[in-house]
Image (cartoon, rainbow, N blue to C red; front, side, top):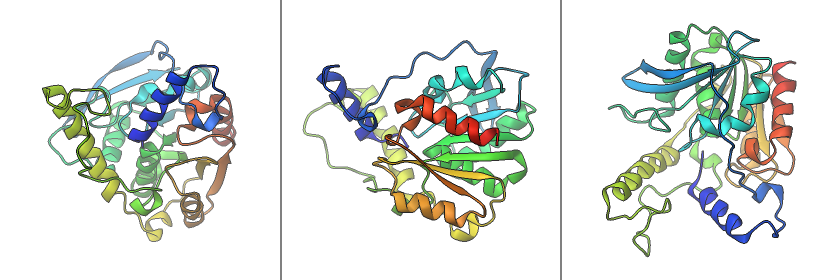
Length: 281
């Protein structure tokens, strides 16, 4: 999930300038623009309008990329150009994020997973290799548990299966800020500022209370799975990632070197190699 402190760290490092040598795991590169899509639009699924894009349409076995919390499919712009050379790549914005609408239903991981299941059906896509980052990895686990026939493989980076897997459980109602600006730079007294705070509260509640998968749930996963974690991830406890891998039959734990939570942007080359080794394996 995309934590607020990651955004603050990005601003601090940007202000420090290029002269400051910082470790790779403390860098937060801004993703480049997404390449032109072969197809994009909105799909009406489960009471929402879900934005999606297809790249490399008609090429090799499809790969579904699912972003982290409070982000959008655009975070995959480091990976899409390479993956779409040999695969059909499906990217979407999860419910209540990016260009997709929230709908009237409560935001849950299972509901977001069902949105992706419905999207694949709308696009007439069979099995996919699913690559999920953070919240996207949790969504991938949910699909693997409830819809295993839709997945060829699961590459889940930095997921957690209960809130205790986080290094710090978010406060649903944090103390008021000392000034009138939200972390996103919005005036808290303005309609936009109030809307932003309400949106962030929805996600803090999600992160503080979900997911809640048992070892028995994880034991039902039969698709080839890799649980991937950066060796400097400040969000997910390393022992928690190891536990997930151990609980899933045949799963492998992969530790990416010198990266943190947003490993896909901190070291795209290493990240792409890990995906390609797994998907092609």
